[in-house]
Length: 500
Ligand code: ADQ
Image (cartoon, rainbow, N blue to C red; front, side, top):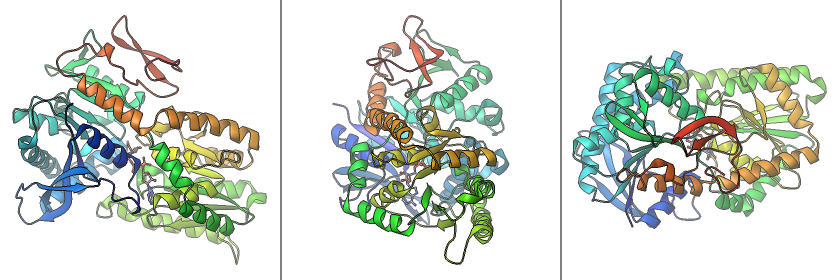
């Protein structure tokens, strides 16, 4: 059996059981590393005065972890700069917030080179290398330069922008060309895959091979959809834990005689927090009889506080919260509670369960795991309603949610009203369909499909033979086995088909 080497910007294996539990992604990757006996490589999170390239090895909960430190300049140019000041906003369709600074790009390339130089000596023949996310687009190029010929796969956790946006990035061709040093590139949804394909076909004169791969820049890769999911078993166990039940009781008592609406995310402009507050304000304005009966709880810990675009956001959110509370609050009640801290996942599960409505309304999101967590935490006999932005990747799968356009305050207000007044029978029907999907496309399905597809890239085996999930529950693009191409055709896959 091959070893699996997982590479990501930060290395985040789960801590010992009982500590604040790690996210589903970390748990799934750690489980794969135990199966494939590989290691997880990335930045330690520490900065030093000069770059040494020293690799530190440790074991965390049976997973081998190998890390390097970076220089302060690396952190500023690569992490705060190119990754989070340039690529993150651009890939979330916010060219107004994108910083196009040449030094950021140089720092980004330098850190990817440093990652490759530290990692290459640790790679053995037969190892599979799985690289994660937008911090590391050029890593395969740097590894190939060092003579690494192993299968290398890349998974993008965030959206891929439409070509019209991507071409605003200086050296966009170099970025896409570097992706052709991967054997396999995975996206969360068909929408992001199509955007990638249209760039390759339109801007890079790419073509399809007979077995459904793409050729451009004199190289060939496989690009596919692998929708990420939850570690459902662990999450449902957490939702039934004592801590979750105590949190539920606390929240239910706090919201006594009121319906609670909840939002949970990192404080990030892509998550649509301002638009959500405006939608809630509109809901209160349009529905006077609901005033005093609905409590909106927003949990949003600060993230990336050093990046400029994040600094003003907090002030604007505080001002909006204050305005709504002074307009619609009372001496003993404020309709909005904004909490700026992290919670344990078992506590979050209790909060989700106590909420009649889960409000997940990003302006653009690769997938969005909070939507799936909210569904997994519900009481099957009296579930809450998920209100989900059509711009979250999750909306391609979770069509039984109340789907909303977060840019429209009116639509948000109407969706909230509909969710808060929905009959129990309809809530149960919708929840059952959603929960079935959450179970079916869980994080293990995602991980195994990717690793299987990556192992099959060894040599030139035909892509059409791979047992790879092509999409979600709906909006799936079927694979045309006869023509060896993806068809634009959409339908729900039947049992036993790829993507079912
Ligand atoms: P994120 O942008 O971080 O992830 P998301 O998928 O929603 O977005 O995951 C957030 C995770 O953080 C969830 O597991 C949630 O429970 C947790 N979390 C949020 N607020 C928290 C709080 N206050 N306390 C504790 N935990 C909290 C990126 C992409 C997404 C993609 C994921 C996975 O942007 O689109 O779904 O990667 O691929």
